[in-house]
Length: 592
Image: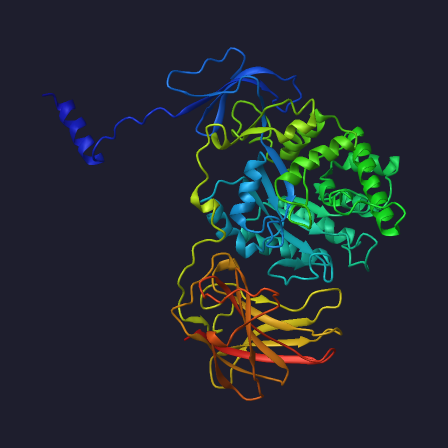
């Protein structure tokens, strides 16, 4: 044997066993479909080849290689997957749970959505959960509003940041970096549709600083703006897209030109404002409230057409999750409403694909059928670029190169039939309040839970030294002037309160507490409801035990039975007389 052989043998031995050659990637070929590629080209019959979730070839003469999986789509229409850039995956929506929401989008051909519902703490666990589901791609938006603004009238700053100066806007963006949001939603317009008093609105200096700081992080900014004046301000402030249509009045030609020049897009969300979406309650033009809704919707439709004709980018979003705006089907209805507004079916379909991808900055990855793009695709029985009603004839949804619904798709995974993530066991010590970073002993972020509305209880919670040694949580509040004002703090048992905890190994909750004499209570929040028990509080410290057997359902006509296996938070708070002050101190919150 040669010297070179022994050198080579030694090298192989140093590296370990030699791996067998990797098999060639699985190839899928969609053949015979009339392809609407989203680029503006005329549809034509082509073959689309897909490997490793990406499109590798498109053309009339492309031949599937030997061993490829064939999807025979003769007579069908192939389009890029649809977008919905404005959704809320909220427990108050239809459906109300994450797996079922994901399922509805997949069954509607929606392959990418923006979710505006989540607190940043929930991003990571939700991304983990979505990884177990048949689901569209979900972009999570971090929310920023003004003190007393829309979106800040019910949430604390762990959920929606409050800013009213450029300095606060820049600080909010910097603080959000750790959560890796996909985009920013800024609530900048406090107009309440003429139906209730206005909230506060964001000034141009603050909004400009916010968008500049977000763009430095490569985050797009969309804004809740439904009036023309605020829409023009958003355009001048560098916002990437409105998250709604403008509806208080018609745009002037000068305002259209200013929006066009800025490069700002619009996501009209006509579906949420459609006055005819409730067939059980048809509009009556002689009724002043109905007449107002009809007029505002007409303004929104006309403004969409004016903007589109001027070359302003129009994308697709629905505000799904809001009342009578169900997930999935509302996206399809939005395309119909765009056509009703004057766009052609082809233009509406492009708005839901390429234009939406451009608005969110994903057009280099998806939104068209082209080599190198992600294979997020839809098959239809009809020709939706000619007849928009054919958007309801979906035959297959493909995400990342795999059929997930319809033709050749496997059954949905069992996780799509669940309503929650599997429950997890947790440690007995929930929070000893010794951490100075606002996080519990379980490494979860505490959440302030004051009442909501324009007149809100003003609350501050902070960790302070305890006279006996160590630290405690102090809740200080000035109660709002309303019936049953409230202030409290919730401690999530898992990050972002996404995955439920199973506390059936314990008998109840124990804590040290003191405060002024108000109507105080402990609340256990869960996936299926909330349960509460009164707390008797005095100026001096005392240790209180609340057995689970003493809990009563809170605020439900049909109370859910306590099970203890779907708990998300333990909350402590109280209600004093309107306009008065409350203080509570908590320590050593444990399960026993």
